[in-house]
Each structure stands twice: as C-alpha cells, then as structure tokens.
Length: 370
Image (cartoon, rainbow, N blue to C red):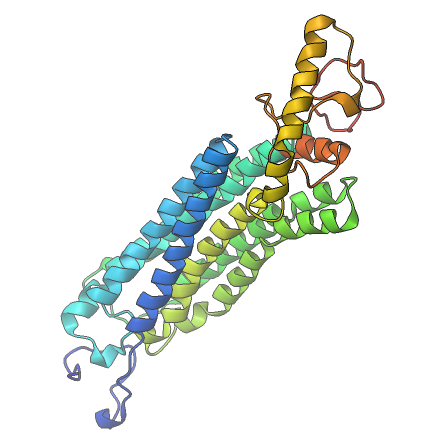
C-alpha cells in the first residue's frame, strides 16, 4: 500500500516512514459488524415467530422491537461505507487523501444513528414492561421514562449536530482540539448508562415478589437481568472513548469504539427478546402435551356457564389468555395458581381471586388484592 505523504495527520510525520506499521482492521470491522447484524436478524425473526405466530399477541412493544432492529441495521450502513470508501480501520498514513476527506461524514451519520437506535430499543423495553406488569404505578413510571427517553434522544441529536458540525468544515484539521467532542461523548455515554440501569433493574423486584418456586423465580429474574450485560458494554464503550477520539492514529484506533457502539444496541435487542422466549425453551413440549387437557377444561367451563351462572371455584377455571384461548407458554410448566399469578403480572389478565371465587372479573391492581 502506498504511503500517504500529502496529507497532514494528527501528529508530525515520523522521521522513518519505512518503520511504520501497515496492517489494517477493515476485515475485523466487516466481520464483527456482519456477525452482530446476523444476531439482530435472528432475534427479530424469533420475536415475530413467538409473538406473531405462536401466541398471536402482537403489541406495540413488538412493533417497537422490529423498528429498533431496523435502526440497528441502519447503524451498520455508514460503518460499512466508512470501510469501503473511507479510512476506518486504516492507519492514517495508508489512507488516500480522498478517503480522509469523507470520513467525517460517515462519522457524523454513525453518531446520530446510534442515538436513535439505542433510544428506540429502550422504548421497546419500557413498552414491554408496560404490557407485562399490569400495575398502575409501573405503567405510570414507564410512561414517564418513555417521555424522558424522547427528550434525551432529541437533546442528544441536537447537541450532537452542534458538536460535530465543525467536522464538515473543509478547513478542519485532524490535529484540532477534540475536547468538546470527548466531553459530549462522556455525557452521552453517562446518560445512556444511567437510563440502562434504571430500565434493566425495574422488573427485578417485581418478579422477585412472585409466589413461585425458587428455581422458577430465579429463571425469571435471570431472563430479565440479562439486560445488565448491555450496561457492561456501555461501560467498556465509555472506557474506549479517549482512545477513539484523542488518538494519534484515530481511524485505526477508533475501531473498538465503533464496534462497541454497534454491539451495545445489539445486546439490548437480544436482551429484550429473551424474556419472551419461554415457549421455545423448556416449556414448549409440555405445553403441547397439556393442550388437550386445557381444551377439556374450556369445554367444562362453557357447559357450566351455559347451564347456570354459578361461579366456578378457581381450580375449576381453565387458565386462559385475554382472548379466551388456553395459554401455551406456561401450561404444563407451572401449577394453575402459579401460572395465574405469573400471567396476571405479564399480561394483566382479568381473573378471579382464589379466596373469593364469586368475585366478578377484574384487572390485577397494585396491591395484589381482590
């Protein structure tokens, strides 16, 4: 590869150009980015299959999930172009001047798309919690956090445009002071990390209060707690900010920062799908085996309802979805009472209480009472 001797880099030219390294990380960028995109597509397909086809319970959170996946895939587009036409992954002395001239356009696009992609997946988590935990206090908290997320992403987009617009100046030099961009990057990362912690720990005390067997409760807590892994990636990304921004070889050294910027929302995409994957994991076979029994209970319920209006005791009632069909994801895995409680918390299903079988149907409220 020819040495670039016409472009001034972010540090003085070395006295011995022959001693400079000429390796590159472009293959690493393309490979890791492609693997992350494959994971996004796989989990989008899983979500569509479970929520759209198996449960037939598509909701706003599912639509938001798909939109988030599209944004994450969109985040990879400027990264690919920066490898193909720009200098990402190259040492600056190996990059042609025409490549260096367009790098900042791809950088700005990546930074702004990252804001939208990560905010959209956080909105997916909040909408999922709002559907799953039918508590007025939790739903109000989710509404407040959704509004806060919208304000945060708007603020980050506006401030990001203001901070990065100087990168489009033809007179801008790579050796210019990057402190403003670095400070903005730290503020941005800190805000995302704080909201990550709030959003990902929200369901843990609620799930912990369920009256389930220890192993079942531990499994549910683990399925929600995997979101903490995204917070860990946020911390690692924050640590890599100075290396990617204040480096003397920015296009080469920025590769880890770019890859973590894609891995972060990708991890969130995966974590948002894990709690709804129970029909594909351990319970699906037993659910199918119990479906005939569920239909018999539904038949019994219909016969008694047709003959008289005497309320059924809770053990006689079939475990039903809001649409009135047998539940398939927990049936055969939990007892009827356990499934009832878990289903109320996940779906807010109208139900009777065991202690008062004659009580009219009502929604689950904040104090778990009748």
